[in-house]
Length: 150
Image 1 (cartoon, helix red, strand yellow):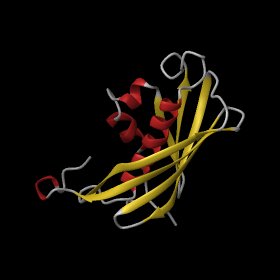
Image 2 (tube, rainbow, N blue to C red):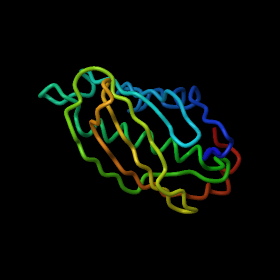
Image 3 (tube, rainbow, N blue to C red):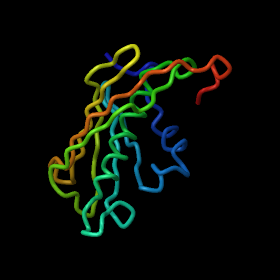
Image 4 (tube, rainbow, N blue to C red):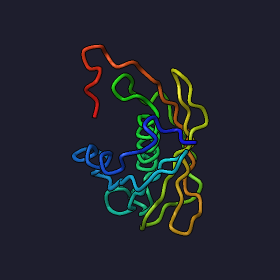
């Protein structure tokens, strides 16, 4: 059984809607979805490293919140509700070296007004780089905007 509202996640649509945003500027791409998780990747390069040459913790957090935000969005009827980040934390387990990081967001709780997402970011060898938890608020779309999402 899938967690997605319409049983499908529009990966191409997400990437298109991310153009011109911090998501695109940091090279974050949503790559796929399973029945209960959203997946993406982020390149560790000059856009995402700190002066020491490893991934900046803030870039990892932006990656994690991007995954959680889009995942939360696709669990909702987007014509009636939307999700916004309330809180995020991250533990940086090992340095993210130049290359590709992979991320996956899975729900811990999909409540009526609050969602909690667990995000794991791994390196190309599959080793954990960062683990994050993001809490999302589920809000009703203002009446004048209902039916206009997407």
